[in-house]
Image (cartoon, rainbow, N blue to C red):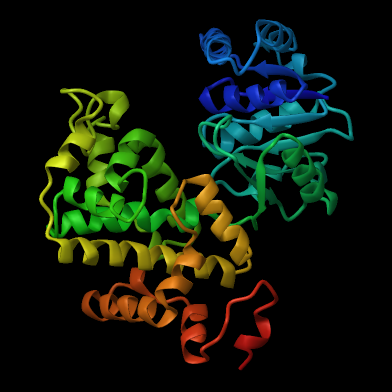
Amino acid sequence: MKVAILGAGAMGTGIGQIAAQQGCDVVYFDNYPGAIGRSSASIEKVFGRLVEKGRMSEAEKTETLSRMNWSDDLSSIDGADLVVEAVIEDLKVKKELLQKAEQHLSDTAWLCTNTSSLSIAALSSGLKHPERFGGLHFFNPAPLMPLVEIVPGIQSGEDFADAMEELMVAWGKIPVLAKDTPGFIVNKVARPFYSEAIKLYEEGVASIAEIDAAVKSMGFRMGPFELTDLIGHDVNYKVTETVWGQFYYDPRFRPSISQKRLLEAGLLGRKTGRGFYNYSSGMDAAVEAQEDAELDPILGEKIVERILCLIINEGLDTVWLGIASPTNVDLALTKGVNYPKGPISWGQELGWDYVLSVLERCHKFYGDDRYRPCPLLRHLVSENAELGEGNLGDSFMI
């Protein structure tokens, strides 16, 4: 199987690595100056470490590298069975590249995008074979993160999802099926993790380090501020802004002024040495600040309560809108961003009535629709209902 990767950045390089290690012939296309050299050097370094750790032999390294090629000529993708686009999150750039790439493919090749938040329908517009196109969203770092969101578009053929699911399982990944809606599963449900934490900080409820420490006490590997600094505010803010705009400016996804100011100042997080934390003393600055934080336990519980209940509400909304099943919502958040528990399971554990009471209290106090309870949550409480995998339509008939 020949796999072509459009874009040899960190994400594209990782996706190609997965394919190559699964026995595929891989070609990277990238005509940005220096991209090819950085990508090939990165792969050499990664494989070198695998050899040092005994997870790959020298013979396997040599054989795998022999099936990997880099080119700045788009014709290099000729004959590819699968093409995965992984360039910047810009609709125009992606559409133009996808249309050019399609001209080099047979009618039976699969063409996919690794977009994290853009419309699959919009990206498919202008393709000659949109039925062979859809979303295949990996998470960074792609070789290590098990989750892949499979997102058929409105024009995708009925066999797209099945074909991609079979391939991803063969590649050792955990696929989840998502509807073509802004943010898909993970980038929709996870928005409150960042946005509500920033709102708490802007309100003066607690410091950045205190909020991060409170969240990590619940089993999260990183706090929201620490994580956004790692992701980069250019990336994280862009996703938030995209999801917000594509949901017609729903207040639940409203970006924050504090993060926008960091972006405007070029303080993008760890990669620039400063974001919410100042890393001039070293990359452990965030952890050190959290260790020094002295947070009242009751206040810590209230902080986590707000963030967690909003995440649970967003998870239920994702089920209610038919974007994903309850099982896939939980899988997506635990396997895609390492949440200690899935939002649906967490909500069932806490009790739907408790989650609803927190949201209603915040909604009444702030008058802000970001705390608007999902109709499915209200239904689960009022009817004392169980949340299953089936069709919910009959439950909401008036």
